[in-house]
Image (cartoon, rainbow, N blue to C red; front, side):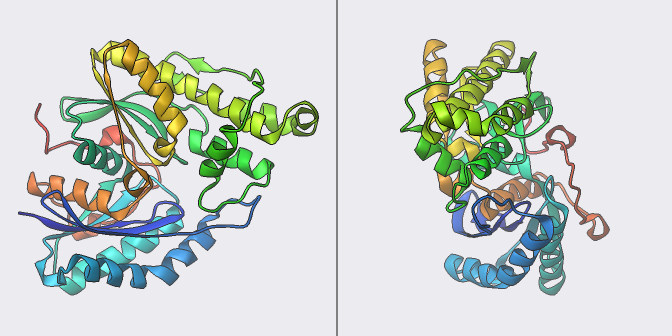
Length: 334
C-alpha cells in the first residue's frame, strides 16, 4: 500500500493531490489567469505558485484526511515545463520530504498524464495522443518505455490555440482553449488553412502565422467564430491522421487522449469517428484529470515507487526538457 503526495506546477496550473493505491483522496488546484491578449510568463507564474502553494497544500492534506507521517513518498514534476514554476514546486516538495523525513521522487509530467488517463478510463494498452499547451505527441508503450511515434516539430497544439485566442483578444478565463472551443461551435463558414503533416509529425506554427498575418483581411469575410471553427477542424484533422497511422503501425484498438486539449469535445468527436471506422475504442477524461493536476504526479510516482524506483535527494532537481521516452517504465512488464 503506497500513499503518495504529488506537486504539479510546470505551467500556469498549480496542483497538489494525494493518492492511496490508485484511490484519489484529494485533487486541489489553482490557475494563474492573465488579462485577455496576454500569455503567462515564467516569473509571474512562479510568483503565483509561491503565493498559493501553502494554501493548496493545506487544502489537499485537509481534504484527504491524511497526516504527513502517513505519506510514503513525496512526488513532484521534474519536467518538462517552465523553469521558474517547476522550481517553486520542486523546492516545496524537497522541503516537505526533509521536514517529514520521506523519500522524494521526480516524475515526468507526460508520464503523469498517461498513467492518470489509464487509471481513470481503464484503458489497457492504448495508443496515446498527448495534447497540451506545451506538448503534442503520439505515444505507444513498448519494452518498458513510452515511445514517441510522432510529435509537433515546432509549437504545441494548445499553444497554437491559445495564441490565436490572444489574436482575437479572447478571455483567458477559464482558459483560452475552452473559449475557442465554445466559439467554434457557432462557426458556419470554413476557411481553408495550411494543412501540414510531415510523416508522423505535425507542424502548427505555419497555420498560426497564416492567420495572424491576415487577421484584418480575414475578419472582413469571416466571423471570429468561423475562424475558430476553421482552425480547430484543421489542426484536429492533422492530429487524427497521425494517431490513426500510429494505431495501424502498432495494431492498436484503443486510443487514449490526455493533456489539457484532450478536454475538447470536438477533438474527442473527430477521434471517435476514426475509431468507429477502425472498430477501436476511444478513451478520454474530463477536466478534473486532463488539465494539469497534482494527483497524476502522485499516482505516477506511487506506481514507480511501488515498483522499486528510488531517487537520491541530490538528484531531486528539475529539467525543462525531459523526454517521455527517457523514463524507464519499471511498473509495466507487458
